[in-house]
Image 1: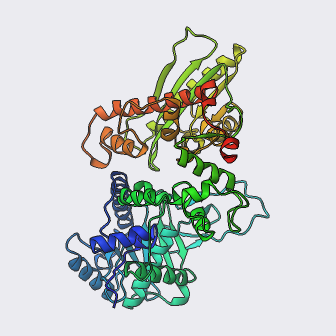
Image 2: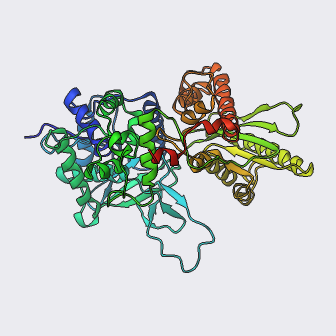
Image 3: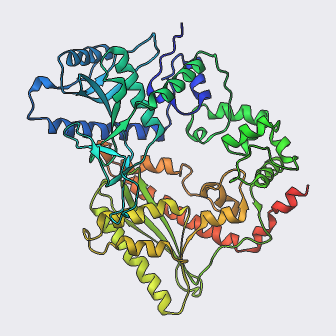
Amino acid sequence: MSSAVLGARNLSGCEHRLALDFAERGDAAASDVSPEARRRIEAAQSHRASVIATLHGFQSGQPADTIVTVDDGPHRDRVEQTRRAVESGAAWIFRAALPTDAGRGRRGHAEALIRHDGGYLPVIVVNHRVTTPTSPDRPADAPAPTLRTSPLWGWLPELDATRSFRSQRRDVLRLSHLTAMLDDLGWGVDAADRWGGLIGLDADCIVAVPLTAAMDAYAEVFARRRAVVDGQVRTGPRRVAECRSCHWWPRCEAELVERRDVSLVVGGSQSLVLQDAGIVTVDDLATHRGDPPADWPGAVSFDDAIVSARCWVDGVPLARRGDRPYVRRADVEVDVDMESYSERGAYMWGTLLTDTTDPGRDVRYRAFVTWDPLPSVDEGRSFAEFWAWLSAERAAAHAAGKTFAAYCYSQQAENRWLRGSADRFHRVVPGVPSRAEVDAFIGSKEWVDVFEAVGRNFVCPRGKGLKRIAPVAGFGWRDDEASGEASMEWYAAAVALDGAPQDLSQRDRLLVYNEDDVRATKVLREWMSSDAVLDLPSSRDLLSH
């Protein structure tokens, strides 16, 4: 009989990581976590505790024996408290711990169990948004709403036309996992009417997630994952997005490099297609000429994959797509970089202004920042000041007959918080623009994404991140530990977030990091416009080898 016992987090992600964790650590839950993963875990725990306190507060008027919060302590004691609460028919059981089922190989816990139709439904709390507001101008012929939500104070799900569901597979898998455990214990509800509750970052409702149809897919996933940890399914390293934060990556990378595995230069799903076609190594791909494999995804350029492999073999960092790269330039150029913390908000808008027509004008870095722990209304104040400054510089350039452009690296993040700040603070904080004003700026030719320009102009075998590309242009960061993940740790210390020890020196560190990011964008853009970029080989040259 299998000895593998899996929690819900073992049901998604890299199968090879799961196999290594179990084979080398003896437990599928024994995986090390990176500082960034630890930060996310701690933030999620804090959010869950806050939401549970809110839910409990809504039930403060109910008889004490119908509302149970399981105490901290050994797992065995927590399971026993949960069992007694179920046997007593408690209406809400907060921080429920389910007994580990060694035979079926399941373990799990729920932020809450709600009594419903003689059984219990699981409720989980997650630290990301699970719904998106729908437009108030919803057309009359739009599809009827299917999402059901419930108020936080009780299980009363109804159709909700004001939101749409941002479904994430891992959330549905966890609810399905808990539902299976409740069913096995005899604590579940009728199999024809299975639901789970999901509370997201906004914590403004309980999303009712239908699970009846999801249970079959869960059973298949669970069976395969158990087979992986039991060694019945062979796994091996393959480079995927998850590798960036995996503690096994140095070991896997060494193995992949030694065998020159093709996944080093293409995406995970693309590498499977290539391997099925007999293109196993980077060298195989670099020398391949002819049509792509039949299952090659149409949205991905096969020529780019070959060029990436050729670059890897030749030790070339980038290849030009055409003769000369192009990025829009202007008389007055402003580089912009936003710093945010998870989904709580954007605490800094860093800027660097360059007037290319006036050598006497200083290239000046300026940051608009709030050090009030997020979320905070002061975030709206700093954003309003940033927007006023940017708008004034833009207007001044136009008045002087000069062209203007503002630049960012990967506008998806900046656009999200430009719009989000307008949505949250317009008419609340003076000076915050409307959503329409923000959208007009984003849609203009004066808002330039250098990340997109890099993608248009270069094949990038090692990725298109700023810290991958800017060093090719000769830029280096002053802080050797500078990264998006590290900045999260620095910010938590800078503002004593969630009770963390305060370290005011981290504020200066964040300002240096942000300034280097905007300077990196400027250096990269100017390099792309210079003759120095012509030292790189072109894709055409590499494909002709």
